[in-house]
Image (cartoon, rainbow, N blue to C red):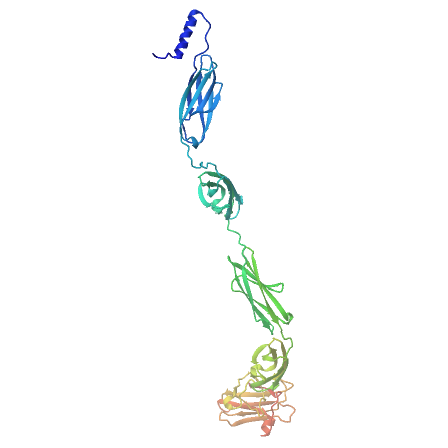
Length: 536
């Protein structure tokens, strides 16, 4: 015989009581319940939300939740929910169960399964690095480098910082401090957008940006380089007044425009083209140490300078000199001997001889001499001068005078050298220049010509001392006529002459003393005369 079900018995009893009109029995209706777990699959440690949809004819008083057989929570009000924290410890299939209970103690349960597959590996790093980018300078006015500095940190560690200008990668740094220098030029004028990306080992990135204003002049850069210059002077020691040669070796990256030379602080000259030179004339006024300076200047006004020193020790003592001329009176063409007696505290370097203002000779060794040739063209007073000079350029001078009175007709001491004599053209001469002077003249005449020959002395020159003796010679050399006025009141001769035959005639003229005495001499500068031939 089958055992009766208690539930069936209770149901039957209730029916009988109802039918018989007895007392109402207790609540025996169980709640209804449905359990939903979300998510159904768990891969990351977290919570599983359990939701129980429970109802009852009278009312659900509570829902109790279980993971397996372990109670994990209770909810007494709808909606009936609980969150269950799960970890990798629950990996596998987890059966959740919810039990709904009403006030009568009736219960109902429902179950749901969740698959848990949580990795046991360390959790992935998802934290971004933090980074701040700065740029210096913020405004660029000259070509050069912009320094980019990234202050980057990360919970694990920054492995790299990458720098960008606009969208172009320009560099990276893997060690702190994270820096990069970006060279910019006028081609980058404007606003530059820099950004930096900091990356950690997990690939997380953090970014930062900044801007830089570039305003670089496109004009050529200003030249600030000084010229280089080396100054030399020659000679380094000066013992005679004269020039010191200054030479500046000057160079510049662009070009030297001028070199200015100074003696001490005084500007003495400028040269604008290489080789840069200047000659400074120094005298005894500069005796001592003279500092020269050369200043080289380029087109931008940059200056370089150099100095050098010259020792000046110039002799200022003049030589002494005297001049002797022999003879002092010249009556015949020949030489005048000039002798200078010159001395100096250091030494005479030369003696220069002058006739008037004309230099006629130089002698550099003692005895200082020169011979000057003179002719009748030099008649008159000659002023000679000797200038003695020493190595320092000091000079002294001495003078001497010579009287020159040379007969311009000389040499006419024979018929072969006779001076032509023409009618109406007087000739001046002198019986001088040698101890026994004889002057010859010649003229052509035709037979029958009537001529007058005159020789004058004192009437044309009151200082004349000549007593002339005159002979006229035939073409064959024989004497035709001669005249002497010796001892008379008149010392001049006048001869009337009728030409006996056509031909060349000669006149022999001397002083009476010479003619009268074969041993006599008569050589005086005052023996002057004038001879003339005229028609009568």
